[in-house]
Image (cartoon, rainbow, N blue to C red; front, side):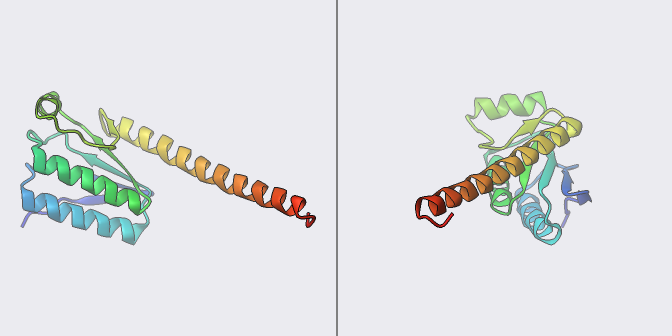
Length: 145
């Protein structure tokens, strides 16, 4: 069976789909990608679908589920290279790539990925700082600070 290559570049995984995705290949890609995220602790994933001519409801669902699963594993997925005909088809069919950031090409996808990861890291740092300030205030109120 054909497999989709997954290339590690820094803390990002690049999935370049160079074939029409049949259902079984899409499912194998999902499993392989999640395994690679676990192995590499990747923070970002770029899925390039620029040569994919057809995104049907099954593939749309697989991409959405893959992004959600990666999110749970602390990785951000960006889909890049959506062809105009694919975008038109997705809209006409009412299919959404729910909560999956998209970009025109790999370069813009990497930029978007860096911004999202930096924003998330900043949000986590702010949250930790807020919790620490809350603990200090509580200690001060209780006369322990």
